[in-house]
Length: 295
Image 1 (cartoon, rainbow, N blue to C red):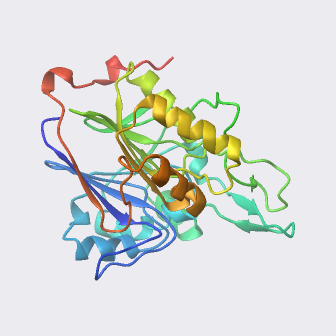
Image 2 (image 1 turned 180 degrees about the horizontal axis):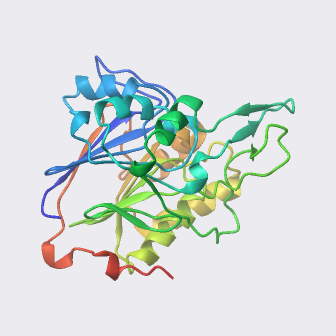
């Protein structure tokens, strides 16, 4: 990868720039030379409006990748199918299944991919790239695939279920992150980190043969994290030496405040319109799929 990577947040829960709008959801746009792709799509067509305001041409998209199958990450697929009808879609097979969350009164609500987004996918089966394991979406940009759940203190972050009755626990096995290498180390984009942010980062270190992790941006689903989980998460981030930390979306206000306090020099704002520039990695250091440990 010889071009710098420009990362722009098109959808997030917050916005501070004039002319842009926010919604509960997340969508990243990635540009590197001729490469143009999305990681998640928010919950509506809002990403296309924000992209237009920011001067990003979504008709040039070469790929769309999904972190998991919840509505607030997949709802923009209808808009994308009209703007970039030929762009392949990368997702875990479980991302297309019905999903629910239990409410405090015992009822449930649907939180999976919408019928309209699912219809768009089913209408273009040849564009679907359903993979359980690691996948190279575009040259130099990788999805982790399923992430091993090895820590004892991380969980999926809420009462999620696979049925409307709320009786079948949903482990959200489709949760995955997107990562790419730069001169300063690996950049990791998180959708919601339902597999656990620490599990995710440690797995990526394994996949990349211990390349340093330079930046971690996105949702960390620490909204319901207890004090022990917050303490151990902060300790792990310190041990990993993360230089740029952007808690967003589902991280939660209390957890976000703590991370900003403990990592004041590393934390950056991740709102609609936020842009990040990452230097390219030298060609001699570039990864290829054969350099990754899939075991």
